[in-house]
Length: 336
Image (cartoon, rainbow, N blue to C red; front, side, top):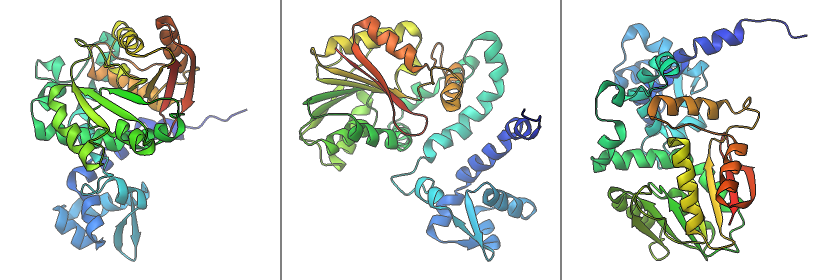
């Protein structure tokens, strides 16, 4: 029989302490500074502008949380923070955490309101311009945001590129392609494939720059358009990464039908995101992401593999299966 302990309750209940400590460290540039050169307390405090009252506690808290190492009074990044939280590296994923710090952290303070009203709690709830409208109107902000999303999804993209059997297919269209990392990794790993990235027109220059950087301009092109208004271009495989959870059930099913219509018989449809386990008890990240969709969208929600397979079968797909990728992410594959 398990004994009752308060430890887990307190750890989660006060978990925002640790979260905000990490987010503030990213905001202050702790990891980027230490990637240049390890520094002692006085040097690092001076470089970051930390007040003497809190500097040691702050930096040592990052050590205790395993985001920094301290050896003989000198602070160092860990291998993970050096790779993923130095904003000068292409592997930087801090952009999404910068957004969490600036936006999501205060909005999640209204989770109780969202749970009792069913209404989103982001900028739109206060009559302001929502994040994505503002982002898509500012090319440089959009570029930074899409780069951070690529960093967050890169591991799953690499896994899809190597795990799925691409040999029997020749063309692919990635819907909601963003910067283009998914289709890039697939094309790099499978030289026989050519592809299309579909997204809103203002994404085009960012997508094309990324494709050019990876030497794929002869095999990967951009198709401007909204998946609400336009058909998905024809291809042997249609992919959607972190797309369906943004929308309500009616829109999810509409997008699945559009993918079905874009495919030939025998074509494949791949959906991936933080798919919730069918028992809805293990993938905490997926369940929390669904709560984030409550905060951020008017009708979006995350879903289980069984849910997704049911919608795909309703549209006409067969041989549907769920496969784990990395971390909380899984893909659902269906054949037309």
